Structure formats: structure tokens, C-alpha cells
Length: 271
Ligand code: HEC
Ligand code: HEC
Ligand code: HEC
Ligand code: HEC
Ligand code: HEC
Ligand code: HEC
Image 1 (spheres, rainbow, N blue to C red):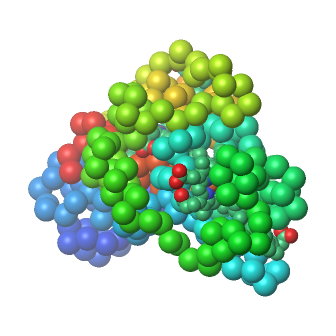
Image 2: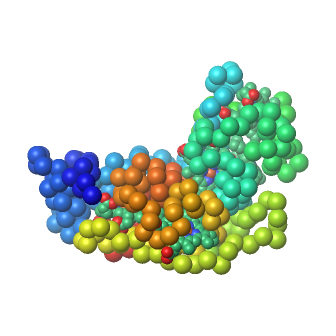
Image 3: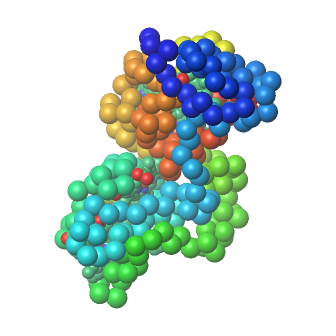
């Protein structure tokens, strides 16, 4: 219960230089939540910079490439997630939720693992001499026009890709594949919505809807590694850890809508 030890970023016109961090935190939080000051809530946290909508979720993989004198590998989430759920790649094909975190080699790919499960020259381009540079681009090269076309047809959101992916899948406007091995497999009917109350009663609770998540993910994507399965047993469920890529921050910093969107998790928060 070391509340004094929580470090909020000191930035912002409301905070000024209070020597005591506990009070600084309280004042900053009150300012955020009661809103006498015009600064938007997001400015008090060290939120990572937001890429442009067509680049949100784009990554470069360079665990082995540079070392082996090829350019790093480009991967775009929006172009893939419109066709495949997270579950296909991050559960069935075993990709890590971290760029460079998967132990994958070119040989694995050519043997039909990882990217090679789909990039086999049949379903989509494969690992032949004329195609190397489509993956080994060395930079993020998401296709703006293709993105604009996709986004135009999908429900909008303020942050991230600017697409409300939860609503897109719910309404059937995207129909990403749930399983690449068992086409008949369907998401579990598990819709429990959890209220995650803050320890401080002036912070409006965050909500976690299982229903919107299990369409994209497997129970095993989150339990037990990211969250214990019993409510209120995950310790240190605090924004500072979330912003450190733990808990909700595993996905909601770089691929699922970003943390800037306070209201989507804390519907009653004042922005
Ligand atoms: C579908 C995407 C894709 C294509 C096409 C592709 N690669 Fe790769 N390649 C990867 C990925 C992913 C890695 C792992 C990257 C990393 O960790 O840096 C990789 C790694 C490599 C490595 C690093 C060393 C090793 O053994 O893993 C070399 C060299 C390489 N590729 C060469 C090639 C060549 C040559 C071609 C064309 C014949 C090619 N790649 C085509 C995705 C691709
Ligand atoms: C077609 C495959 C594919 C799909 C679908 C996919 N991902 Fe990924 N994702 C990857 C790969 C590949 C990486 C990089 C892994 C590596 O480098 O080891 C990655 C990395 C990530 C990362 C880390 C990003 C970073 O900057 O470090 C997050 C978070 C993530 N994915 C979340 C998701 C979520 C959430 C979904 C579903 C909405 C999703 N992914 C769908 C393949 C996919
Ligand atoms: C589950 C299947 C699947 C996996 C796994 C997969 N891809 Fe793809 N990828 C596709 C399909 C299908 C397309 C064609 C998308 C379209 O219709 O435009 C594609 C397109 C691409 C493109 C073309 C540009 C774009 O983004 O549309 C690149 C580059 C690419 N993939 C890289 C990768 C890399 C690198 C990996 C592994 C780290 C990977 N893909 C894993 C299915 C997959
Ligand atoms: C992806 C969901 C999500 C988003 C987006 C989000 N939060 Fe949270 N937040 C949580 C969860 C989960 C908790 C822990 C449970 C609780 O305190 O309600 C939390 C806790 C908090 C707390 C309690 C104190 C603390 O240190 O954890 C504050 C204050 C807070 N959030 C403010 C914000 C603000 C301001 C934003 C927008 C910049 C934001 N949150 C965006 C999920 C989110
Ligand atoms: C995106 C992450 C995520 C996915 C996917 C997910 N859960 Fe959860 N689950 C959570 C979180 C967060 C909690 C709350 C943990 C806490 O409070 O410590 C939770 C709690 C639970 C609880 C306890 C609920 C309670 O009221 O005590 C059960 C049971 C549960 N999950 C089952 C499942 C099942 C079954 C699936 C798959 C159908 C699933 N979860 C998928 C994140 C997830
Ligand atoms: C493993 C990845 C992952 C984790 C961990 C995760 N989410 Fe999500 N979440 C998603 C994806 C994917 C979506 C679909 C929307 C999108 O991609 O922007 C989503 C959507 C949501 C939505 C919107 C639901 C709707 O129907 O509009 C809320 C709210 C949300 N998440 C809250 C949370 C909270 C709170 C936590 C932590 C307790 C959390 N999420 C943890 C991946 C994740």
C-alpha cells in the first residue's frame, strides 16, 4: 500500500512543484477527475506517443535480421487483424505479444511455422527470391490507400487505428478467422463484465467486458499469465503498471485501442 511511492508524471499546469509526491498525486488526480483545470487527463500519464492511424500496430521485427545482414521485417496489425483474430497468431501460431519476443527464424518460416503458416506461396506470397523484400522492408510501409479503404467501411473511434474494432467484429463488418486449424471452432459464450474498482473511491471504476475480448482472444491469452482467473486476485492493478505494458497494457498500448481513450475503460471519467 505504498501510495506515496506511485509516481505520476509531474507535467501539467495544475500540478506545479509540490514537494510531497503523495499530495501531488492526490491533487493531480482530483484535478483530473473533478476537472477544474482544462488540461486533458491523458497529459498526466506518460502515455507513449501515438503513431498515425495507418501506422498504429505496425511493427519491425529485428531479433535476427540486422545481425544476419538483411533488413528488419515489417508487420502490420490492421491488415492482418481484419482477416484473422489475435487468437490465430498469438495462441495457435505462438507469436509473443512483444516485437522480437518470438524465437522464429527464416528456416522456421520456410517450414510452415509462424509467418510461413500463411506465407507459403499458396494462400499468400511465400519465401521466394522475388518476395524477400515484401517482408524485409527495413521500415514501416503500411499502405495508406488500402488502409483508407478499410477504415471507410468500418465504425470509427478517436484513437489507435481510428477504427472501433470491437464494434466492427460485433456487427459482422469484419469477420476475422477464429481458428486456422479448426474452421468450425467458435468463440466461447462467456460474456461476464467485470467492474474493476479503484482503491481510491473518487476514481470511477474501469470495466472489463469478457464478451468483447473472447471474440478476438482465447481464455489462455490472458489466464493465467496476464491475469489470475479469480476477480480481485491480480495484484498491483494500477495505471502505472498498465502503462509499463503489464495487465491491460499488454495489448492496450500498441494494438488494441490505446490508453489515451480513458472513457472506453472508465465510462464515468471526466476528460
Ligand atoms: C513473410 C515474410 C518473410 C519473407 C517473404 C521472407 N522473410 Fe526472412 N524472415 C522473416 C522473419 C519474420 C524473420 C525473423 C526476423 C528477425 O527476427 O529479425 C526472418 C529472418 C530472416 C533472416 C535472419 C536469419 C535467420 O536465419 O532467421 C534472413 C537471413 C532472412 N530472413 C532472409 C530472407 C530471404 C533471403 C528471403 C527471400 C528468399 C526472406 N527472408 C523472405 C520473414 C520473411
Ligand atoms: C497474422 C498474425 C497476427 C495477428 C492476427 C495479430 N498479431 Fe499481434 N503480433 C504478431 C506478430 C508477428 C508480432 C511480433 C512478434 C515478435 O516479433 O516476436 C505481434 C506483436 C504484437 C504485440 C506487441 C507489439 C509491440 O510493439 O511490441 C501486441 C501487443 C500484439 N501483437 C497484440 C495483438 C492483438 C491484440 C491482436 C488482435 C487484435 C493481434 N496482435 C493480432 C502477429 C499477429
Ligand atoms: C494467419 C495468416 C498469416 C500470418 C501468420 C501472417 N500473414 Fe502476412 N499476410 C496474410 C495475408 C492473407 C496477407 C494478404 C493481405 C491482403 O489481403 O492484403 C498478408 C499480407 C502481408 C504483407 C503485405 C502487406 C500487408 O501488410 O498487407 C506483409 C508484409 C506480411 N503479410 C508480412 C507478414 C509477416 C512478416 C508475418 C509473420 C511475422 C506474417 N505476415 C504472418 C496472412 C498472414
Ligand atoms: C484499457 C483500459 C483502461 C484505459 C484506456 C484507462 N484505464 Fe485507468 N485503469 C484501468 C484499470 C483496469 C484500472 C485498475 C482498476 C481501477 O482502479 O479502476 C485503472 C485505474 C485507474 C486509476 C486509479 C489509480 C491508479 O493509479 O491506478 C486512475 C486514476 C485511472 N485509471 C485513470 C485513467 C485515465 C486518466 C485514463 C486515460 C488517460 C485511463 N485511466 C485509461 C483501465 C484503463
Ligand atoms: C483480455 C484478457 C482476458 C481474456 C481473453 C479472458 N479473461 Fe477472464 N478475466 C480477465 C480479467 C482482467 C479478470 C479479472 C481479474 C482480477 O480481477 O484479478 C478476469 C476474470 C475472470 C474470471 C473471474 C470472474 C469473477 O467474477 O470472479 C473468470 C471465471 C474468467 N475470467 C474466465 C474466463 C474465461 C472462461 C475466458 C475465455 C472464454 C476468459 N476469462 C478470457 C481477463 C481476460
Ligand atoms: C490480450 C490483449 C488484451 C488485454 C490484455 C486487454 N484487452 Fe481490452 N481489448 C482487446 C482487444 C483486441 C479489443 C477489441 C478492440 C480493439 O482492438 O481496439 C479490446 C477491447 C476492449 C474494450 C472495448 C469493448 C467494447 O465492446 O467496446 C474495453 C472496455 C477493454 N478492452 C478493456 C480492457 C481492460 C480494462 C483490460 C484490463 C483489465 C483489457 N481490456 C485487457 C485486447 C486486450
